Length: 241
Image 1 (tube, rainbow, N blue to C red):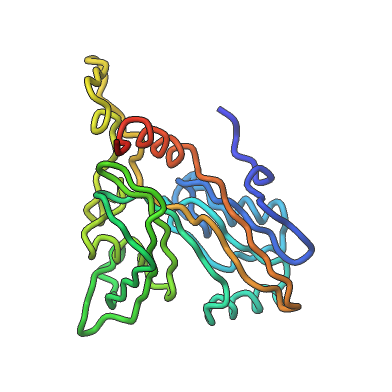
Image 2 (cartoon, one colour):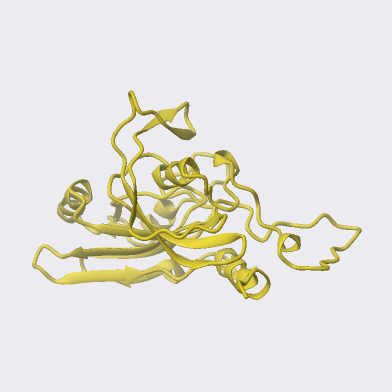
């Protein structure tokens, strides 16, 4: 198996920023677990002064912006706080949903260490705009644009409207198996079927913003293998006649 190389994760680089395509399964920031791997640690070896301007959950893949100086880190961090950096996520959700510029605005609060829940009394304002990209017989590919930046916002919001992310067990989603959509599927009797998508099907697809000088910047991150494979199987076996 090929060793993960930081250069393979770079989507864009100039004298001010580096944009990475984070794989699923590694943390954004330093991982204190024994043998843990983080994008931050890998990036530091490549560019010692680099600083990540935001983060993604360990399971979530996709675009992460990093700055090469303290001044640029401060500039882009403020832009994130002011919502001047447009973030677009793609997700595969359970059920057939036809979203069209749909605003989900349930207030959220963090419950314990690992989960967010809707709390209309004490929750903090949270807004996500959702659109359907493609739908199948039993699943839907959507894009989600978080206006606010609450903990697990997209995952909690989609669960709140009845369509949890595929594979997002923490929020009620189920792993995706080929046998769920392929007729007459005959698994190997000696082996337990493995899920095609066993983690939350969420991908940070793009970032769009204006450089302080006014130059527009946009970068897209290709889907990881498990996400792309799931879509190919849905298009083949779960298509709508």
